Image 1 (tube, rainbow, N blue to C red):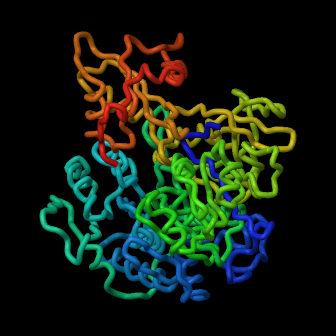
Image 2: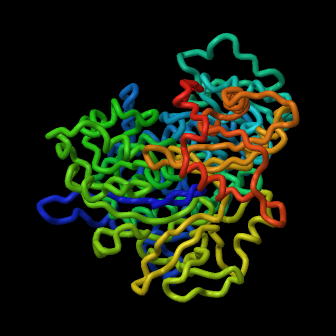
Image 3: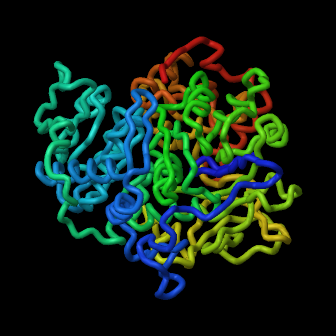
Length: 583
């Protein structure tokens, strides 16, 4: 089953224990979670009062009620933090941000891989009401420049090893004022020149007052701008209010049954919504614990899972296939995992259940708007392969090209609407036309096609949007094409997805050269790798005389895709050629 590239389709694997499924109430704090329900039904979600939902208030409440409970175990160096530790450290760092002039409403970009400082910074920025812009750690060159410029970021917080990616483009970003560097050692390394930007050592922000920053932050203040892949244009910055970021986590907990005694192993990047909101923040809501690895590694995966006692983890894209293709072992079921979110749900899901002692479910959602659908453990086996049924508090319809509702079983576009205020994203940053177009007629238009069966289960069919999902990363075909078209030898180019051996998307490019121009397939890939993250560079390349087009001159990419799937040998394959681009 093909899942949408421009978003995530979430699956859940739930451990069977003594023939029953482990589910229960979340949180150890009962009805004390930001106030017990007294107002109207739509003002609360899962026991939380929406108008009191801010990142700072939630963490403060947790520190007061379960402060000594461990929240974070960072496996690479063994650092551990309680809920109280995270609260006090984020207070100190938040006050440090205020001290160096980062105020409420300031747009602050973050460029780093998984580490404790990343989560502390998310909490600290939330407490002072700054707007956080998480950026893929692999972003560089023109793509990174676009993210920083489009988001109006004036500050970048970066790990020292990634600082040069910002410094190299700073002259083209006159609004950048400060570079906050998380040093690899006790002091910043030599050789870093920040040019006109003020450089700040992150460690200097960790000294000062532990009192909560004195900033009035509201539930509807903008908290995040998260970039999702573009389709017919540049990547879009999706706006998350403070409440929206936490409602994402609350909805996940409500649908999956996370509990206060869970331990979530996180190897997905924390700059993605799934890793941060669906895992780290979901565990915060649940009074539970997280175990964080810097990045996914199969060689470390089972050791980390077993040593940490993890009960929950997430696998996206080819990660599940990599786990599945490991040699069989009698120890496959010797783990404490009870829930594994997996996307897309693999064809071998039944065998996966037997081998690892779990149940497999699925779902559908997107960063652009929300996570509205879940296939749960109580749903019929005959509905396996569907995305499930609509979650509580959401509405979903299938509509035709004119936005009229389709009959049961008819394929159309999936459109969404939430019943709760602030339970959906707030549109695209600085793209009002795109926001209005997506939200036309009162419904969010996903750009994905599917149908509802007679029992209300959603079946995904295909995506209308022109984007690619590779190993959990959303890739804009348009952005790769723009890089290719700047090459002096290339007259035209089309970028599209081709499935690989692991049923994951790979980037393919069909290229029309200028007359008498010379360029090799390897030259195409190396050119892209110099200007884009390695994961966006094409694996497959073909040179063609022309691109197939409609009568209105639109490229018929589906024809290129179908031809490539039918005859993979007609494409030059970077992997078979032995061309290495790094991670």
